[in-house]
Image (cartoon, rainbow, N blue to C red; front, top):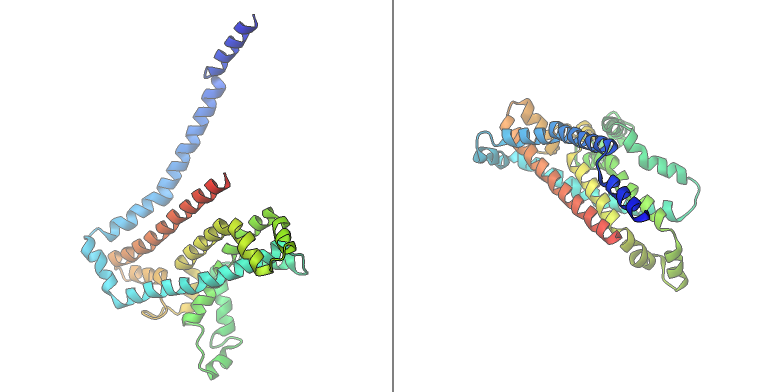
Length: 289
C-alpha cells in the first residue's frame, strides 16, 4: 500500500543509522578539538594573565597604575588610537568608495598597496620610518636643522601605527560597496542629489555596520601594536612607551604583578572591543535578515 510504504520510509529516516552516528561523532570530535584549541591557546593564557595580576591581591595590582610611567603609557596608547583611527577611517572610506564605484588607472596598484601591511612585518615597516626620518635617515639632517622630532617621538609612533592599521576599514568596506552596486547612487544623482548627499543618504546607511566593524578592528590593532612601535619609539619611559612596550619593560624587570596588571587592562580593552564586535555582527545580521 502507498500509505504503508510512506510510513515505513519516514520511520527509516528517523532512525539514526551508521551514517548519522558517524556524522554526529565527527561533529562532536571537531567541536571538542576546537574547544581544546581555544582552551589551550586563549582561555588558559587569559587565566594566567588575570591570575598573576591578582595573585598578591587587587590593591597591589591597582597600585601599578599610580606609577607615573604606567599612566603615561596608558595615555599615550589611547592618544595614538584617537589620532590613528579617525585618519584611517577617512582613508578607508575614500579608498573603498574610489575602488568600488569608479574605474581609473592604478586601481590594481591601490588595492595592492592597501594589502601591503598584511604582507610586510611590522618590524620592517618601523625600520623603514627610521631609515627615512631617523638621524642618519634620508630626511634626518633636514629634520634636525628644523628641530622636528619624528623618530623617538609621538609623530613616529602615530605614523608606524597608521601603516599597520590602515587596511582594516578599507578592506571591510570594499567588498561591501562592490556588492551593493551603483544603481541606487545613480538614481539619486539622476534625481538631483550631489555626490556628498548621495554618499550620506544612500551609501553610508547601507555600509554603516561594515564601517563600524572596520573601525573596531582598526582600534584593537592600534592599541595592541608592538613591533612597528617598538622600532620607532626608542623605549623612553614616560614619553614614548605605549602599553605593550611598558608591559615588556616591567616583565624584563621581573615586576610580574605590574606587567600582568597592565596586560590585564590591555586585555580588558580587547575584550570590550570583542563584545562590541559581536554586537555589531549580531545587529548587522539581524538587519540583513
